Length: 196
Image (tube, rainbow, N blue to C red; front, side):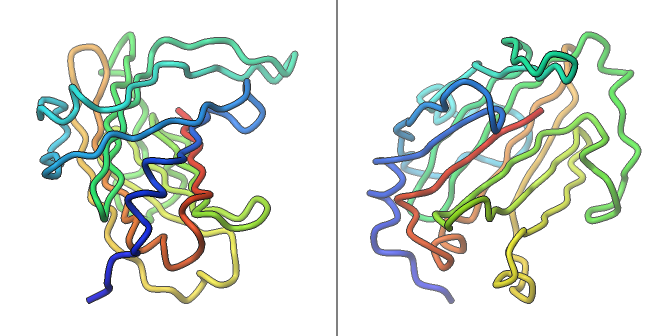
């Protein structure tokens, strides 16, 4: 069993950069509240910990035609953590949930990023643009890719998730294994980009 990274908790509460697009307005540095027990990963954001979690609704749409970012109020992200995991709770509003696109039905089954989904780009403190890319669609189907050679043969560690379709869109809960990412670099330099 892997031991927990000694500085994980302090690093996480000191620095976490959150951005909704790579070239969007400057990403904020946030403090992630620590939860005393993990949220139940069931796609329902009703655990008490979510009420006390860091909350952001500053998502932006990117327009290719004029390369501009426009605020999009349809997504809300919440973050909380413990000594081993970073927990994300997302509310994704959609005008007609019955029309949400979900063509991929198996994990690692294809281009999940073409579905109604959330995309996470996580850099655990590596140099340059090296990252993990985790994509989760509204039917709880995911894919995980790594952009750097050192991770090519590394075993996958579970990233528990759950989604639930609601009357006004969908909700997702994701647990990111910080204890695993800590093995790659200094989590004090951890960066997270969230796309929808």
